[in-house]
Image (cartoon, rainbow, N blue to C red; front, side, top):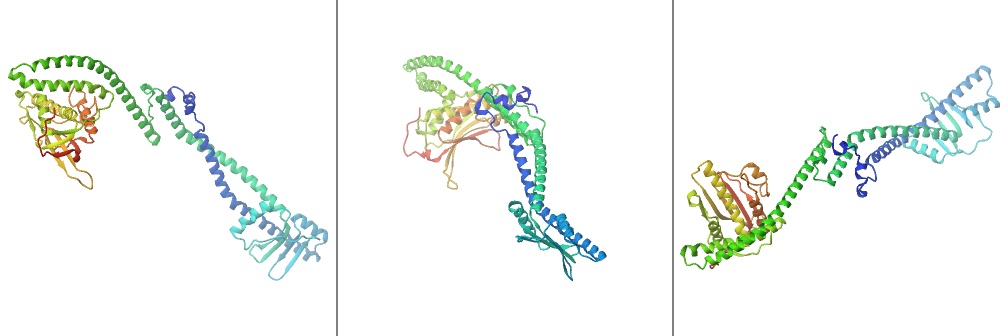
Length: 507
């Protein structure tokens, strides 16, 4: 895997050594090694339980079979010599079998082969023929834990079951054999566990832990300096989950680096705009003083256009003040009052000063009695941005396609409440232009990326979206079957009402 941590030859420990909060206190690979070893040991314990019980059963069965063979051999010797075993022979036989008493039973008789002079009280009796798996396990652990010098009587069938043997013996030899077997099983299990753990550790470390360590190192290095694109991880060719994680991490780091670069660009732009804004306010203040003097001239044309010029200058001064607020990504809170929307739209139309020679129709279809509780200045900016974008789109359409129908329409529709949700009043701005390109649709309402024309900044739609959001509404691009663009501003129905009396126009 190739990434920044791998290229620089640094491990996760090297990267995180400088920051105590990022130091690895417990390595994942070590945990996996221990967990694998414990899992294998647990599996061996589960195997050990039945195996030790079977070992005990087989050991006792072997003892019974030995007694039967010794008994049959002594019977053969007695039939040939005509004499039974003597005391010395019995002692030697008992010593060889490590027993206190041995006997053989068949269908006709029971014959005692050898017996020690003194035999203690029998404490344990084991019938090999009737033992169950659970009794075998219980007997095995009873011998391992509590076994010692207890006397046990063991009996069971031999061969086809026609002959059975019996032996009375000490439990100590059985316990010692079981302890030796347990030790061997433990050492074997420990070896298997370590071998399996090392295999699993090597595989997991190679295919999982090491790539994760590399991704961790890349994230730590990238976090130290996100602006450095050389610190972005380079995904490997793996097609598994690790490969997908590397691709997603690289994509996230790339987008974050691009975002930070845009933020720096915006910060620099904000500083430049602030400087321009300072000087522009002085120029507008001087222009406002001149326009105040124009208002005193008696010429009818001057008197007609002077109020419009004064309102435009007032708004320009207000806009310069709000530039800094937008640069801080904070739009001022709306100062709401009831506004007759139709008059506000007419004011927007006059401010746009549409050239009559381009033959673009501006249609104001807002009901004359509709009142909205909004900030008039902010809503004026909102509608101005949307209408100005529509006019620019129509101008391009005139130049390139020469369309016959060129109009901008502003209107409203009501949406009734559904499913217990509040109804809405929808203010729309639509045009018959060529529509938005796909790139503009993908970055809609994003500053410097959502522009629909070459050289645009996309700030108009970004400002519009922020104003609508401040009013508790939503602005969307409506899907239309016919050519053109339609933006819909959806506000709560509670902000609208029908006028019962004349209201002063917003200025």
